[in-house]
Structures are given as C-alpha cells and as structure tokens.
Image (cartoon, protein in one colour):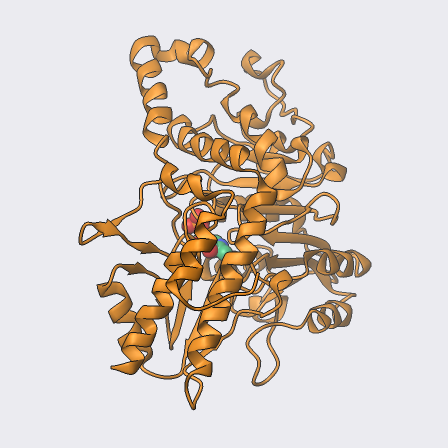
Length: 425
Ligand SMILES: Cc1ncc(COP(=O)(O)O)c(C=O)c1O
C-alpha cells in the first residue's frame, strides 16, 4: 500500500478494508456528538455491543434458576470456562489444553511464578526488561524477597544501549548467557508497555532454555494484538489480561498458558484450589489435591461468570473476524500512523516527533509511542480537547494504538491533522 497523508486516501483505504464492518459492533465514545478517535485500546478496549446481551443472559439465568444455573443455564456455569480455549488458543498460538481463563493478570503472574520460579542458592536470578510494567517489577521483587533473596541482586534488568530506546535481541541473549549459571527464570513482557517494542519471544525462549532457565512472558500488550506462537516457540508459561486488546471490560478476567510439556507435571509446585482439582471427583469434597492434567489444573476458584460473559462476547467477535485479517489490517493501520508521523516531521526543518516504537513491523504491534520533542504537553492537551483518547507518560511520551477491530484509516489521518494544526498555530 502506497500511503498518502490526506483524507481521500484514508477514506478509500477504509472503504477497501475487509474488516470495516466490525467497528459497528462496538460502542465508540462520543465527543461533541461525533465518534471520538479512540486510540487507547492498549489500556482499555472498547465495549462490544453484544456484551450486555451476553451478561443479561447470565443474569436472567441466575434470576430464574438460582444455583441450578451451574447445570441448566443456557451456557451452564460449571463448564463455562471450557468455551474459551477454542478461540484463545488461536489468539495466542497454543494448544487448547495449554490455556485457561482465570483470575486477573498480576495474580496469575504470581501463581505462575510459584510453579516456575523455584530459586536455589546457585540459580535464583530473574532476567527481565528494564522498565517492565510496575506491577511486574513488584511481582519480581516480592517473589525474590519471599524466597529470601535480595531483589537488587536477584532481579537482572536488560536496558537499552545509551541513546537508544528499545532493546536489542543480541543484548537480551548475551545477558541471559552471562547469567547462565545463576538464572532461574527469564520473564519478559511480550510487548513493552512503554515503547511498544515486541520482543523476539522465540529467540528469548531458546536462550533461556539454553541457559537452563524457564521462559515466561506477560502478554498484556500481546494478546489480541500481535501474532504469537506460544506452543511452537516453546514458551513455558505466559499470562495476560483481557481488558486491553481483548475488549472484555475493566478488570476483566485474565488468561494463562502453560506449555503442554508441563501441564500434567504434578511435581511442579502450585497453590491449589478446588477448581483445579480433577473434575470427576471434585464434588466428593475429599482431602488430597489431584490436579487436572491441563492448564485448568492451575485454577483456584469457581469462575466469575459475569466477567466471563463479557469475555465470551468479545472472543466471539475475534472468531468471526479471524486473526489473519486483523493482523493484516493492524500492519497497514499502524504502518499508516508511522507514515503520517514521518510526513509531519518531513514537512519541518527540525524533527518534532521521535517515534520510539521500532519501525520494523515485526517488532511492534498496534501501539506507537511518540517522544514529543516540541510542544508535547500542548499537543496532548489539544488532542484530548478534540476528542482523541491517547495517554501521556512522563516525561514526554504520547502512546497511541489504532486497533484493527474498531479504528479507521480516517482516525489516523485526523489524528495527524490535529497534531499538524497545533504545530502550525
Ligand atoms: C504489562 C502489564 N502487566 C501487568 C499489568 C497489571 O494488570 P492487572 O492490574 O490486571 O493485574 C498491566 C496493566 O495494565 C500491564 O500492562
């Protein structure tokens, strides 16, 4: 696609977009009676219009059936979560028995670390990216401390080189090699929340294994966004949230992946609960935990059906749209945003925006992080006033994410146009 920074091009691209109709399936927040430019699906995805109907179904079944809804609801609650692996396994590239929907993200990260971070005196280090999302940093620090290690010694952060914003895969791999004798676990965000860099998960996983460590990933900014093949890339474990690109509502239920080679391993320690116990004899209510030999064996509690209903509404839309089409549009839409920002710079004698997200489309998803070199806060405030949803991260980064399910090429053009008009004022 040869991009042009003008409204005719954008509208034509929208008219040729094979997934254009899906935008109508979402509520778009309004600004002065018009659709806003919602570029913050990397924080909270929009609400599918079908969510209320899916949740209403469960409320009605609860009202009419009470506890019997566990067995006789239209979608019985007891096996409700079993509906998810079909779609989710396509979204995160794993086998259905390697995925389960449960809890929320940081909780799941801790639960997975219980199983996969089992430090010894010799092998106790956690290798991660510098500036991981704070909740992940707190999880790493507190896990190290819980096992009696000093987090300052146990948590090894890989940083960008001087003058660079993103990590080089070779630096990640060499850090893992350097700590090969002491690394217990390599735990990265799949896409870094700040820069939008999509790490080379396969290479990191291989390097972790070569060093004798487990490889795990926080996929909050990956799930529903970029292609990933958790099974084939031999990722030991991963977790994600459903409220960003998966559009399943604030605080929505999270998901985990555990590689097939581990799912039936009963020697892995875990914090157990009755929902992870063998389904055949769960209700015998007897002593002695007997784990389900799939990712389901990591569940603790019975499922939060109302939150899961919202998740189901959203995943059904992903199923209809198909990940391939969404990935194709994502590449074009985010590529267009890069082009428009480049055009804004090119029209000026000095650079005004430095895009810190990788320019290689294989190293990024929807998100584009813009380091504002001129009028940053002024531009951000004007964007907000004009109905653009974006976010500001100190000291001067604006993060935006055009999402293929509901954003348009015209959104991208309008966004660039607002920035230009502020720069010209
Ligand atoms: C990368 C990453 N990790 C962890 C979290 C925290 O998620 P939660 O509050 O669902 O535990 C977030 C939230 O945005 C995130 O982006």
